[in-house]
Amino acid sequence: MTIETNAPFLENELSDVVRLFPEDGARIVHAFSQSGDLYENIFCIDGKTAEFHDTMPTSNDLERKRYAKRFSKLALYKMLKARHGVSMPWGALTGIRPSKLAYTERAAGRDWQALFAAMDVDVENIRLTKDILRAQEGIYRRREGDCDLFVSVPFCPSKCVYCSFITADIRYTRQYLDEYMQTLRRETEASAALIGNLRSVYIGGGTPLVLEPPHLKMLLESVAPLRRNGCEYTVEAGRPDVFTEEKLSLLKEYGVTRICVNPQSLSDATLERIGRKHTAKDVYCAYEMAQKYGFDINMDLIAGLTRESYEEFETSLRKAVALDPDNITVHTLCLKAGAKLKEEHARLDGETVGRMVDFSRNLLRGAGYEPYYMYRQKYQAGNRENTGWTKPGKACVYNIDIMEETADNLAVGANAVSKKVHTGENRIERYGSPKDIPTYLHKIEEVIEKKRKLFSAS
Figure 1 (spheres, rainbow, N blue to C red):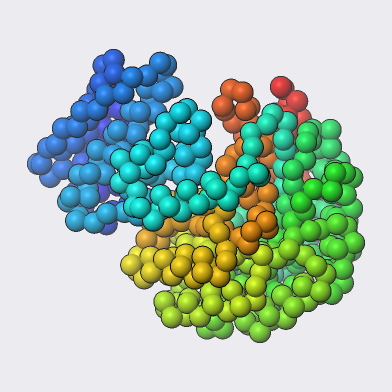
Figure 2: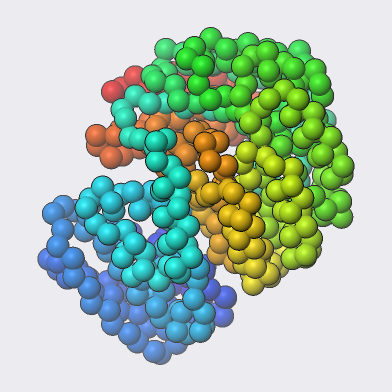
């Protein structure tokens, strides 16, 4: 489907709605006008025209633009819903962070559940959002100066077919490893003065535990002086084929409190199809090894992996629950540019993926987990979402802060995106470091200076 509009600032929003529905070659023509509190949208699709008139009192241009986007998206959604005879689980909401929208509405004294219903969000997703807000009580806060530290380790033992991150097989990037670790330490040391109230530290990737002990120790030593308050400390240990007792012992020695064991599936056939070099048995061994050190443990699974059946996903999730980790995150496969799976034009069965996600909600609730964070992405199978589930009292602070965008995120390393949250002004400034390792190494002094300006300006 193609779309033409007389309001260029609405083009991306309308395109997001179009992507929700099956491609049918239709030509969509849109006319928008706004006068005072009145918003008018006229859509014409294959000769069929519909007019939509909405009113909303507003006090400034920012609010007017927000409602212009909301009403135009809802109008197009209604037309395409009628055209295709299908509803989307999140209705006309296309944003990444539904829970953040709920918080915004609640802070303004408005009924967020009424808004979600008006945007045709299904009742189970309204319930999911409500449960997440409840689970975040006591952790969620908006306070100027709060900060989380993210450290990027963009190396992996191999590249999975669904992955679109700027990471590479360490066999081809090992030549940069020594210089990368030294440069990362330089940037981390320079960042110490920029940290306010540190809420959490998260070392992610890539696969950080692909580092051998000398490099891993160098990394942990770089972070140690910044984590003076004993806050939550997570390492995305990742794939079980990189776990060793020596590495886990180092994590414990340097105060790591939580690690991630990310099998994505516990089906050997699926693991082979997605390019993993390990088996489900290796996951169990890594998990058992990690338990001995007393870490809180997060696990990730993905619904919709290459040719994985509903039954295989169900079995994987049941096995994960039986291991009894503190957190389980269920991702819906997202096909982005840069992923081999995307390049192969794999077709996903949205209905089956939807069944997988629905099953995960029922099983995890029944096993005593509660949803505590959630986000959505473009091109997700079945227009679903990624949801983190936690045992009571075991929620990951970093995941809540980063998804709700309530605290500064000071991110160091290649392809790391820092965010400065101006709480009082309700705005966010961002700076993205160079994505590829050689450019990051070459421009490190520029990176340090730009982050200094970003975090010191206020």
